[in-house]
Image (cartoon, one colour):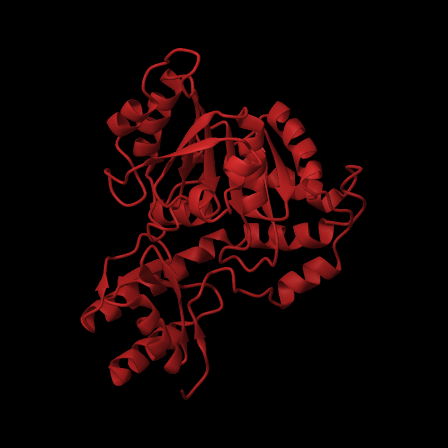
Length: 338
């Protein structure tokens, strides 16, 4: 290997820059468990407004945000639906079942990557049966869908799924860890992608440079219950404004994600030219089909290119700590090493 490592492992590898570190150092803080940290309060206010929800709650991670939402929405033994490969199904260590008490079931991607058809959802919900049958009470959506290559769900398809779910009496939680990416790709405000949901999570460490932090948002009553659940899970922090300050800076940088999307398209085009099996990405995640994923990852590593496996493919993720020159250099190394 020659040259600097080019890191496509995730958009969570981004590091706070000098501006973000200064904001963290200068943050006004108090005790958030008591409820008096002003910087966390400001982040929660701005995040709720941006997401089109009445209230929001800061959490240390997106996984905790999702678990809080599911714990509030589900009763033990309730069935919930999510698309195949959804983060709540495959990347949260079974906490939806183990801690929230839900029984997960899968919806296939028959409307496109990461999305199901309304009639598929309607059939999966079914009709209420006798008391000894499972109750389906919750639909979990994900936008963008990580395992589907950062695929987006446009507002019209979102509305159709919400209509089916609500007609059946289901609560809806949106895992919006990368909702900022979806909004930028679709050129709509984030609030346009949360219409009708009962709760939404969103993450500030996915390509925006913040080291830590997510929010879960919903009604004031939901957030009141969510705050208690966060405390049960050990997510109550004291002078958390130091972390929330980074999230506020990140929130101001959402529009910059468009550049990482362009980098991903450029990378996908270059890989396709070199014979890789890729589709044009919606956002900043490129999934490449290869005959043997571990062999491909080892080969890339020998070229100084870091990537990770995802959904049986090699996953490349572009982010703010990569430059246009990095994309060109990665493609040059792949071509030279082939």
